[in-house]
Image (cartoon, rainbow, N blue to C red):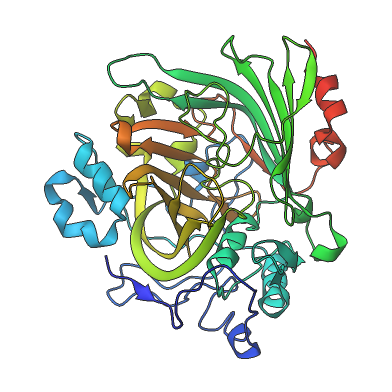
Length: 457
């Protein structure tokens, strides 16, 4: 797989280096407003960025997202399977290659590439200011200065900067699922699935339209509220979490209905296993990477072209039959649309003296949206342990792109997988929110007192 090396030696997470005025001037010229290369690749398989375009004209919430997409109805250009893997392996990550090899019948349908991701003008304007103004803290990982909502580091100089671009990509003030199924496939030799129905909301206090300095905002990356509806063993449990831009760990409050009390759980973060999922799903795995980045050193390796889940509306269809898409052998290939895109490659290595069950990770960030499209976790012996793939779609509500839905394969257990953060089969669609007076989009909603008040049953 060809790697486009950085112009400087790949850098470990350290002091933030702002872009020079000359580099900042490239935004909107040879770079897009958020830092991607405007030009296509040499053979045209990745086209030039077309600028901001309406992706779902006339769409309104509740209507089918795929049916409204301007490029709907395409057929695959080709499919990648174990039989022709060698032909395409240079455009796949090591984890993708292994998944195809070890999963009978696995198929990746590849479609024409559409660079369908853009951002509203206020995000572009803040991003331009951030190019020379945004800064990491002296600790090398916290986000200290910048203008929001916007990409903090459109010309990244370190892996930590690239990760903050992912964390702060524009998604409105939040998004929510009225219902979401968190699903764990059966272990080898069993037919028993683990599936939990839940409702969840994310709130980004910095996501309001306009421009605000981080210095004038609370140091919150996001709040989230999560409440289980099923199965019986989990029903009624709920939690509220705050993650910070400049503090380690999280503030986590968990409601246990059997005790009728809220407990503060400071250790329910990082690599702690999520309750109810057989140690297959940790707290820092949702959203491809979740929580503070302080436990790793971050290395910006360079850029490459790979096949990633893109414009994959089939993963987000609330009217689909869940079991027709999520099967014991994996996610139905007809729902997984892949395209060739350029990505930033970031390597994470656990800091000396710090504990984490995953000592090394590799992330692949889409250059147009800053979404983490692929992530790979390696165990202490250097073996690939887990592979995560997310699915980017243009979000009509925000005029940006997002990638909440993802699948995570445990490669050491034969590809046993977790599928989460999708409205698939839920009956009603998730929604991204740009403006709202709903209580869920206020910080008070995420207090321990409110969690108890809304959780008692």
